[in-house]
Length: 168
Image (cartoon, rainbow, N blue to C red; front, side):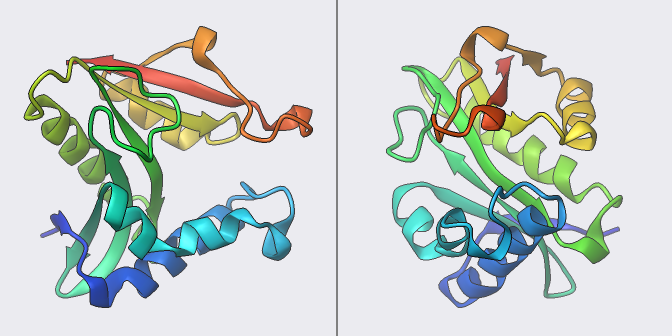
């Protein structure tokens, strides 16, 4: 496997947005399916790239997945506090699952956080049902932070996101 992780190019934004949207739909992570308003956010890679770093995994020119890395203090942070970076919107294309793509993307985010002056921790949110992702995070040294669990849509009680952190 010869996977390269690099910054997304503007001509890839549409494709990585679709990979991300389809991953969330496939995994049942959107409460309203195809009519979920969050799909627009997932597909709007240009907006994310203007406020954070969008990284992609590629192999032989094909996109395998992507992630949004929010530097410490970045405007796209959901839960990051001062001195913390955040991982958001990790997604792997169906055909690339089980090949280490997600792990490569997360490891690159960890490396970016370690290289960020003043960054002491990296955090992320995840849905309770994402057991494969949770095993990956824990294998890489992340620990659960139940005191930081949160709900992005307060009127939906079943949408509490669980959180993890890795001290660098």
